[in-house]
Image 1 (cartoon, rainbow, N blue to C red):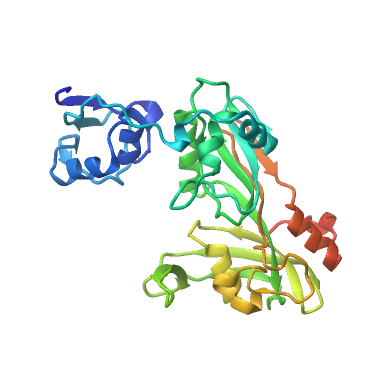
Image 2: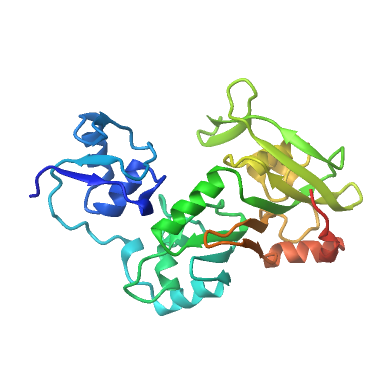
Length: 323
């Protein structure tokens, strides 16, 4: 068993959370044991007690208590990626360069693991690079049923830089959604704070709550509509709250098609094939590339949404313009 250590935070570890720093450098340390070290003050940052969520800056000194050298059991996410899964994850690539990948995440596939989840994007990222190379890292996330552009960094350093871009709201993202009804006015901004709350069914739900919630804002415009039946919206989130677009669309009285959680039966359109599937797609992302210049990526619609566009007579070429 090793003794107490002190480690300086490197440039590549800038702005990551303390718990993620430990996961990166001491993978054999369980989350529960780390929390105990933090509660008892055995882990310190620059001599002070710290929380797992604190973000680190280069040059800070971390006190690491005796951890031991017991190897962490290999999880499903750590196991070699099969040839079939390697081919599948590579089929999602929209853009690739020396710093990052941009993927077109399919609907219905979770980005990360969780209870009952055996297959997810994060668990297959090693399939994007040669065996034995550093595993690419997620930069941001999309809900399980949301499709579209997902950025993945090739290294911890690039992930840190991109993380700062996202947290600083310097990444411009646009989403396409099909909603029931047509919002009035046809373009504008929804500015409604959001709060996570347990619903009557026992599951967590996000609700609009200006008194207790966190600031959330979304710009929207109607690109095209099918009478009063449905509308194609272009959405630009100015903040990044959980389920923000879904709650804001429902708040306009036009829930996203397939979103039974926030729209209930109003989120279904009789006669529209696939209307039980969430019609929300991360269409584009535009940001400063960590290696210089600009990055602009567009993801084509998934099959279900493309079929809905055709069914309603929407022309994708009409999506020009800016919010």
